Length: 244
Image (cartoon, rainbow, N blue to C red; front, side, top):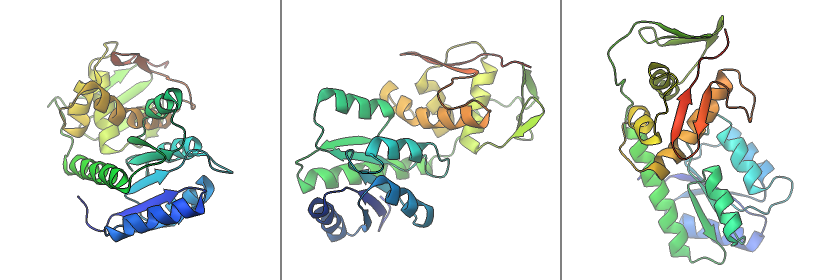
């Protein structure tokens, strides 16, 4: 686990916020405590963050909105995110998990439960960053599918005539999809390629969700549209040829 990790905590209850800060600082973490999502976003712009703990019911910007803004930014997409909330209904918990949050703790909570969640998510994040995605194939010939062109040898992508800048994992993900165009690929298989990680369907889906989201946006598709990367619910993802 990363020593002296930096944790951003957002909660609009001052006493609880101060208690969380003291609990984490007593364990050696660096903590920045803010009262709402807007200030959390401001902090992310200038403060290196290893993990985020956020309440849901906050003024100006709630926890769900904060989570979506964090996951929409390629620089923050890999930061572990824990919801800490009094919303204990199954529907609330289910929604938080469907968004892809790394954990969901309900109030009231024991400090030991919070610390266990924080340690676990930081340790998992460190394990993931230590793995380097390796191409699963050695064929470096350029490929064109509809309006999408990829050159594995030069590590370059174009949508139509426009170049697309991708991270290493985004490129590996797109390469896997384009090599099996029109075929559904399981999250486990894709995560093996992008993260060099063997895991179950649930964790693989959680790791892929933000990666798929940013890839779609970089390919030019607006928020909420799948574009050429289709989600086959409960099965996996499939790339269909985009328009020329």
